[in-house]
Image (cartoon, rainbow over all chains, first blue to last red; front, side, top):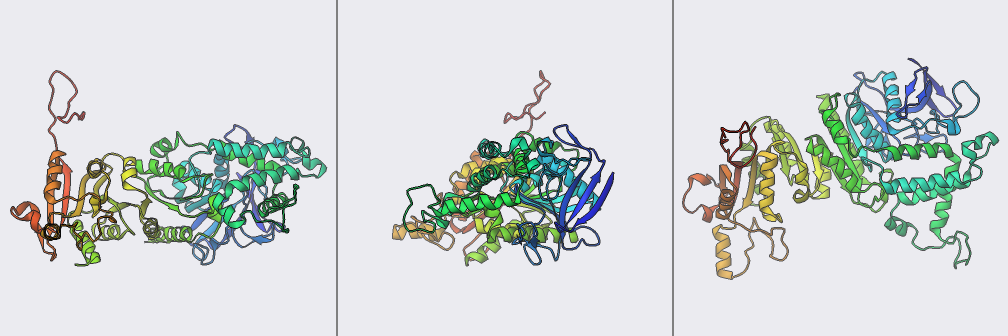
Length: 382
Length: 227
C-alpha cells in the first residue's frame, strides 16, 4: 500500500493519500486510490494509548474543534472537544476525518476521478457506513495507532462508532454512541428521500453534472436542508425558539414572504448550507445512512465475531425529544448488549432540543462523556 | 438510626454475603456507591440499573456500567444465570409485582440478595394498634397517600412466599431498630416482632434430575431438560 500525507494549506488540514490500494466497497465496486482529509488535536502519548476518533454526522467535517476555515466559524463540536473540554485535548489525541463520499477534502462525488480532470459526480460509487469505517481504519493504521481508546459519534457518527465495534473491535477499547440506532428507520428513509427528490428535481442538478457549468442546484439542496433541519428539532424547541412570532413585520402580509420567524430561520439554514455542502455528496451520504441496518445481525455479529470483542465498553446516550432516533432505538442496542452480558451504560437525557441535542448545550451529556472517558482511561493506565 | 447510616449498614452486611471476584447486578444502584464498595473490597465486576436519571448519570460519570431504566420493565433483557449475584436493596416493597421480580432475580443470578424493612416490627404494629392509622417510621417514613412503598410485608410473609416459590434461604440477617445484628434462621421466637430490617441471601432449590431409563433424555423434576 502506498500512503502519502500532505498538508492542504487551503483547507488547513492534513490529507492522507492512499494510492493503488483498491479499496473494495460493500457494493462490490472498487476505488483504486482515494484520499481522506483529517484534523488532529492534542498529542499522542508515548504508549499511543490516548487516541480518540470522533466521527462526524451527515453534514459535518474534519473540523471538530478550533476554527473551521470553510465556514469561518468554530468547529462543529468545539463545545465538546478542546483543551479542558469534556473530550479534553490536553489529555487525549483526537482525530477527526471527513468521511469517504464527503465534500470537505476527502474523496467524494465532487473530487476529480482518478487520472482524469472530470469530477465523479453521479459516477461516484455508492458508499456505506461500513466503507467509511474501513477507510478510517486505514487512516488510523497509517497514523501508526494500533488501538484507539475510543470512537465517539452522534447520529451518522454513532452509526460509524457502532460499525467500528462490529468490524474492528480489536482496534478499539470503547465507543460512545449518541442519538443513533441499529438501523435507519422507514420514517428516516422517507425524509431523506424527500430531500433527495428536492435536489434531483432541481433543473440545475442535471443528473449530477451541474459542476460542468459551474452551477449548483441551490434550490433543491436548500429545500433538502430545510426539511432535514425540521427533523433535527422538536416541536417544543421550535415553539420555544420561534412560536408564531413574525419576522421584521407587525402584521401578516397575506402573501408568501417569510412572515414567520421560523420560515425565515429555515430559509437562512437552507441558504447557508448550499455555500458549504455539495449536492451530490448529500445524495450519497443520506443513502449511506439509509442502507445502515444491523437490526437482525447486531447480536449475532457481537456474539459470534471471530474478532474478540468482550473487552469493549459501550456508552449509549439518547434524548427524550429526539424523534428521529428515539430512545427506543438506543434501548434495542442496550438490550442486545445486556443479553450478552456486555459492559454497557445507557442514559436518556431529558431535553426538548430534539435530535440536535448532541451538538448543543447539554450539561449532563458533557458530564457523562467526560466521566466515562476519564474513569475508563484511568483504568487502562493502572 | 438515620437513613444514610441505615444504607451503609445494609451495604456492609450485603458485602459479607458476597464472595470474591464475582459478577454482580445491583438493581436500583443509585450513583454506584455499593458497586464501588464491592469493586474495591470484593474485586467484583459490577453492573447496575437505576431509574433516577440524575443518579444514573452520576454513576456513569463515575465510570460504572449503569443502565438508566426501570427494573420492572428491563430485567427481561438479561440472560439466564448471567450474574453470580443480583442485589435488590430496600426496594422490593416499592415494586408493582414483587413476586415476578423475585423470580427474575433468581433467573438472572445464581443467587439473589434482597433486603427490606419489616412491616411486622413491634413499633409498626403498636402504631397501627394504638392510633388506628397507617404507621410512619424511620425506615418507612412516608404517609400512605404519598409513598413509593406499595407492597408492605413482614418477614413471615416473605418466608411464606419463598417457600411457595421453592426459593432456598441460604443466609438471613436481621437488624433491630438499635442496629443490633442477628441470624434470623437461628432465632425462633419474636423474630418478626423485633426485626427492623432483614437481609436475605436466596437461591433456587437444586432438584436432583430423575433419570428416566426408557429415554436417553434426562428430565429434572421441575421439567427443565437437564441434558
